Amino acid sequence: MTGRPAGRTAKIAVIAGDGIGPEVIEAAIPILDRAAAKHGFGLQWERLPYSADHYLRTKETLPDAAFHHLRDDVDAIFLGALGDPRLPGNEHARDILLGLRFKLDLYVNFRPVELLHPDLTPLRNPGTIDCVIFRENTEGQYLGRGRSSGDEHVAEEVNTGKGVERIVRAAFEWAKAHGKTRVTMSDKSNAIPTHRIWQETLQRIAREYPTITAEHRYVDALAMELVREPARFQVIVTNNLYGDILSDLGAGLVGGLGVAASANLHPGRRGGLFEPVHGSAPTIAGKGVANPAAAVLTGALMVEQLGHPDAARDLERAVREALTIGARTPDLGGKSTTREVASAIAARV
Ligand code: ATP
Image (cartoon, rainbow, N blue to C red; front, side):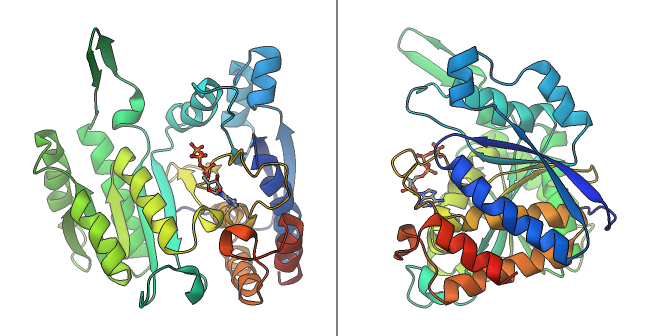
């Protein structure tokens, strides 16, 4: 990821969204402010109303003017979650979340999978789980191309040379910058012939990074290997759909969605869209038990991208320490509330 110069106030647009989104975002913001104050920079938050409630009230998902504002005037977007049982078609989320990813060309969905405490994994002897998934974010099946006629429903998957090359390159660049020695590309080229573009691209790009071992796994085999031997993976790069699925699998290996962070980025450009991997979790919304750790860790990715890696490390350490002393919401087997976990994290920044 490309950072920005330190020592200024960054403007952050906040789309707290639906369900537990507002709860985890409002819990995370004071913690991020505390880290910013400690590390000598400022965060200026601008809360935007776009959500299921807003859509149901106004029929507005994300107006053009708001999109232009998000594109031109802010340093980053911090998003909680979108999804509401009253909108089973998820039309507002499609416009806001997918719309921003596509229209801002945020082609990297960066999803760390890191075991923050040994007892968070369901595995017996996992070793050190510390890998990052580079999920292609602008192509694949998520473009929504296809057709339905009669009994036939066709979903098209788009893989362009440009799209595959830039995500594979982003994975290698990140690996190189972070001292990683292996990049694993995953596709299903044994069954889907067009996935050969992924193989060809991997081989071509890998030649430019002689210190990094490039390897390939079919996605089904990778899913199994991730469970059996997660510690051997460092950087995984894959398409939009497989990245979505593998990152939930990865989250399951390290404590679940309550601790899974993600960033949507266009390397080399400022800003990005930062959102926890989890959705709006309507069944626990409003009960004060949502785990704020994913939002705080997502905030850490954001401050790193804004040029403050020390603050990011500090936030990660604070989350780790809070988990270690047992500040845990029910999803992690604890009894703490969102607020209690947030206070425990804040006290350790
Ligand atoms: P989406 O379709 O938007 O991904 P979903 O309902 O399928 O949404 P999530 O909302 O991500 O999936 O959550 C699935 C379940 O995981 C929730 O019902 C909840 O039990 C748990 N969960 C997710 N995020 C959290 C969190 N931050 N804290 C506690 N539990 C969570």
